[in-house]
Image 1: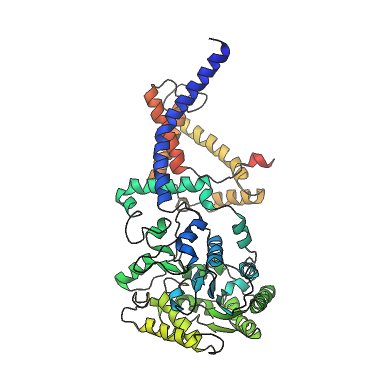
Image 2: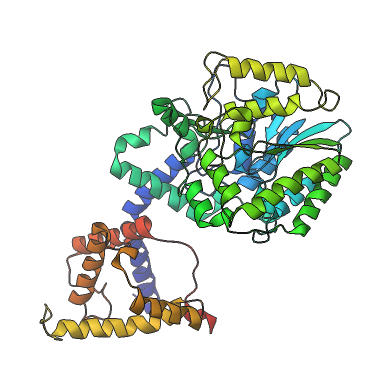
Length: 403
Length: 118
């Protein structure tokens, strides 16, 4: 045998052995990777949107069937990208814009009068909002926006840089090889802990949903609003309020961490940006209703009394409505739950309110809005009243029949 | 110490001191800048608390002990994975265990080591 042939056979023997060593791992990995794909965890955002809006038809699931949710657990949810493409695909007459705090506003509130998309979570600072609004097309028909800027967007310490453009320019997270490793690893660990857990991702009410969280009933509905199934089941068990975020919102406010950094001053440039955004929306034929969304009573108390928090909160409560008014729009402040005669049972944590609270907020805001400014105002109000007063409606969820 | 499988009692302080002498310069490698490294070192000597360290979970501790024991047993070889003396089936099990460990515990984010900054 020539030295060349010798080398060749050594090389192929090495490859054969390497393959044999890797084979058991590859079999395990591929099996769990395929399962993750079947559970929708590694399905691209665009494919999810197509599945949620078949034939581009807006709606919250087919008649009598559980809605298709989007809720990745291990892989990056790419929320800004998802929300933006969802908005483009649905092209609705009414949109809700803000952070995750507005996610309980449902399309069913406006049916059958308007189509609706909740883009909540697309904006986490004033830069995100400006970027999103600059991408909206001018409409010949009047459109409506419920806009809920969070008070800390106007503080000096909060970044004003948009993450939307960056997110839109990135490849889908499901394409990244790490997404496949992480999701297969998650399922493998689940199988080690409790094999029965695996079957819960492939059966049950939400078996058509996308992502491990979505399969458990926690995720984004086709209208973009969020379904909090896990928290709602907890509420059903004891009906008691608990700040469910980790760490809790009240802890974050008290310690000045994250979004709630101690910051007593407004940044005028951010208020100017809000003013420009509202002017842009007006030029694009949007009628905007500003909403100050509720906090739990303890968080509200802390924000209004804590010497290191109240400066920014109270100043923004005063200035933001003035900017809306200067542009011919209304802003309604529901930061204090008690204004609507609600209590903490209408909150999932210190900052996220339930759909029942959101229906009450919308009802009150529409009541205070001129009939000529909001088409079908009376019909939508009647629908909301019916939902709120339906026999099955409780603080943390509206009656299913009413929805 | 070199030829013993189990270190003698009097070798243990020497091992600990060597380990610590390596760890102190590593603080400078891992920190953002010299100021942060000095701050970390100062904190270690002024307000160190075991409760701030989350490695004392039984599982993690077992893994650390296992890895250190394996390193010790293999210290005379060029690298710890020099296991050619084991029968093929045992080597395959070892390789499979390593691949699974990378799969289960690996972090895959790109964090360049400080040498790449020079």
